[in-house]
Length: 158
Image 1 (cartoon, helix red, strand yellow):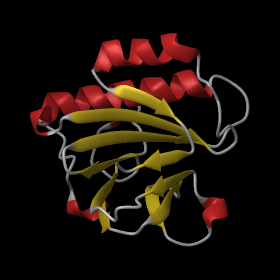
Image 2 (spheres, rainbow, N blue to C red):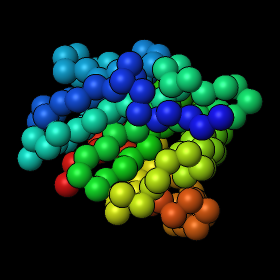
Image 3 (tube, helix red, strand yellow):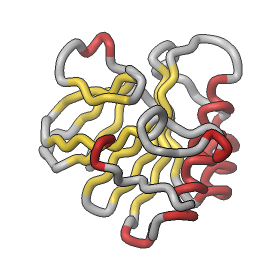
């Protein structure tokens, strides 16, 4: 059965200049209390952003594997987001794997050709400036998914 990645109950739309996403769950937009945000969104041009909570919101059977928290879309851009709040352990590899699985499900069930810029984004509140394995980590992700991987506590809307 195909997954509907655009379920209305899981979507929020905003043009705010600055906002955050926190993992309630499900992943939720926030316009107050920046200390609670897992990732900041810098939308200085006030573009219309569609945020879709994925984990704990979309109807995805558990048999489909682990999935990332959410995605944002605007213009021709698609960004899948995995949020972490951990200081130790194998969080970066786990986050990457969750993104890879979610992207595979999306590609299976959605026409991805309408998006020209494709990103996976990992944000860890405890390690905002973490360099996750350098170029090898990111290159392996891009080779496997076709998406560019970013690891940062800020997503800049371009």
